[in-house]
Length: 368
Ligand SMILES: CC(=O)N[C@@H](Cc1ccc2ccccc2c1)C(=O)O
Ligand SMILES: [Mg+2]
Image 1 (cartoon, rainbow, N blue to C red):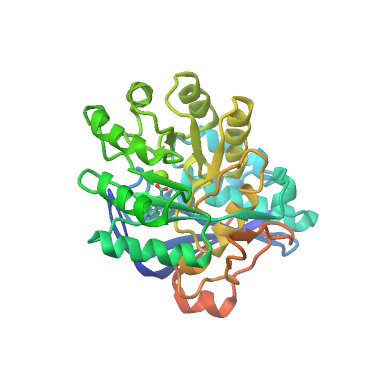
Image 2: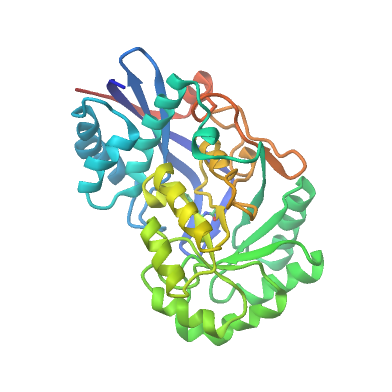
């Protein structure tokens, strides 16, 4: 596959409501989309999931754009065949920047599959045509406000509730949701906000029969998570720590995780994400697909990934209107708590040109 160039397009997407986590509050998404154009006019799309600031991980969108411009696009354009699998070789020589790599790799993968007429879900090994949807609920100003939000999501049909927690907002919100809504599927995500010294406090969540506790400790504290797992009953799920298939194998072998949140942007793309899925499946570790407040471009690919056999828990693949009033693609809409897996070639969706124009803040063409 010969690529003639890439378009980098920045879009500004206001969120329908502020989204608060232990690392900050988001009001808008400043998203970088990558479009690959091939010699015979085919094109492929990828979404960079990096935030505006390096608060979830070390990447941030301006930095990712720079890495794509200076290192990743030149590496692809120098390949005789711009195949996403072949591109992994020069990409591996560039240290880090998984979200930047994932955006470029996905644009290439989308183009390759559109040319072949193969849906991404089929290429990855999907076994379902729809996936159960969970929803991530931010930290709120009060318990009543939280209960109102959870009630709304349950009424929309979401099959699993995830509550963001941090020191000072953990046991009480979980207790209130459990008492109000009974035995719904419920889990929490701390985004690295605790330390091992909080183990006894985190054990107070055990009576609420949570599905899992996501990333309680810092990204690089694998030993701490293994020790914490010995002190609390709630299963530990890692997110930020799982940066590759090898990281997943290590965390599992060290007893640091018993469930894994898979995010293609965190591991460098959908090809490595499938490897993480396969390593976890081989170890009997359930996985689910996390979210980074993606537009329909990233959401479409995530829903395809969520249809793999090892994805046995509802993911954060929520409907488009969880985050955006108007998506740049046809919206993903909840149907009986599920999202339909796209059936078209590649990621199976296209941005609507008018919707895209409405939110575009910058565009740049990068050619040989
Ligand atoms: C759905 C969910 O909870 N996602 C991340 C956290 C997160 C939160 C806020 C974000 C804002 C902009 C971009 C990415 C973001 C990711 C997580 O699972 O840890
Ligand atoms: Mg998380």
